[in-house]
Amino acid sequence: MNLKMANAVLAEIEDGLNGGLATIDLFSKSTGMTVAGIRSSPKACALFNILSERITETIKKSGLPVPEYVSQTLLRLGEDASVMIVVIDLTEKYRMGLAVDCNKAQLGVLVSVVLPDAIPRLREALH
Image 1 (cartoon, rainbow, N blue to C red):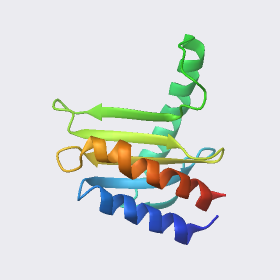
Image 2: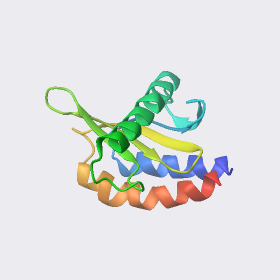
Image 3: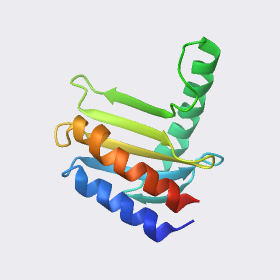
Image 4: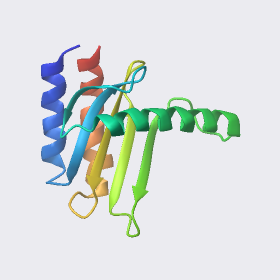
């Protein structure tokens, strides 16, 4: 694992979201414990790790035609959907979770620019 590289990519994610990143963590799927982050939230990592497992199990049991390689969860929260929680499976061992203020960061930039650039580099850093 290359934590220096991982932290550099996390910093680039923060920069790309123009002040809209509330928190970001890379965390273990087996323990829910954070291994790197910016304004880390250990409690959120542990709880969203459990939630991610349950969502994956639910999709499998539901029979919905969702490919197994689709391994990210996007949740919009608040009456005006101003907060987005994103959880992405990066490797067999690690996930990334982030909370984004949608009033400051553009959703299109997050899903079309920032994440596609960062995900492969984080996967490389975590191997």
